[in-house]
Length: 311
Image 1 (spheres, helix red, strand yellow):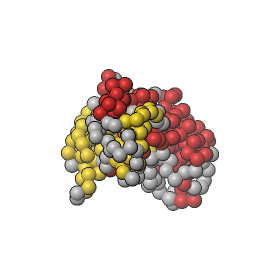
Image 2 (cartoon, rainbow, N blue to C red; image 1 turned 120 degrees about the vertical axis):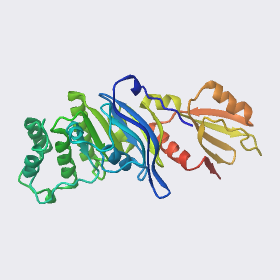
Image 3 (cartoon, rainbow, N blue to C red; image 1 turned 45 degrees about the vertical axis):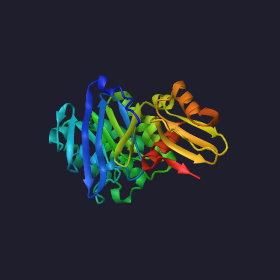
Image 4 (tube, helix red, strand yellow; image 1 turned 120 degrees about the horizontal axis):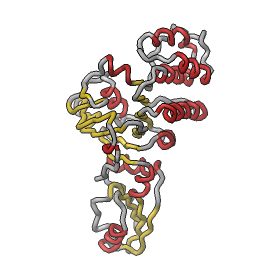
């Protein structure tokens, strides 16, 4: 089992989710998820496609009913986002439901009337920065331009909480970089809280104070990138000829055996754990390998499918 490494409970929680569950038939889209996100934090929710990220976010936004569990936003329990909550939240979905027949200027004028704290100057600054043509219809915009328009709508009413659901999915690397730079700049200048979901490891690592990995509906692990790299290691063990692993510590969450080479990925790595692996198995040698976030992500996801591979 991998442990929660978060310190976010020490600060005021803007998002506080307890045992959040959603099932579709026999499929657990979200399985007893617990999450706290402190004020001013950028939390990156990382997971493969189909892991449950969008279902989780849609429940936060009140767009999908929950089966069980509780959601608190800004300290208040809620099952559906109230009009007051929506004033405090900016939301960028993966699929943008912006009227395609409206012009960019028309969309901005329409949306500005929905928010009490709409900042026209900020909206115009973002439109200029993104080079969004005001007279063009939304239906003629590229996917990247549409994503940027969605970000303008989400940011211009100065939300305290910004929720981004795969916002840069399908964008080319240069446009993704520009998009994320805008998110970072607004976060730094205004100190807002951000929940950012993606299956792009580099994107999440770049913008996040803390990272959570969601796999098969479960929030398997969370912590800062430095914490994850410090605590999760891979150990390469060469076994004596003719021997198989005889002892697998509970800290092992993924393993791969190929003849005499046994690779194990462990949580809460320590020298004591290394000695345990060495002495309790017929090990000729042990080598500790550092992992980057992408390698950690892959092994966490693999470990939720099965304990390992044998070849």
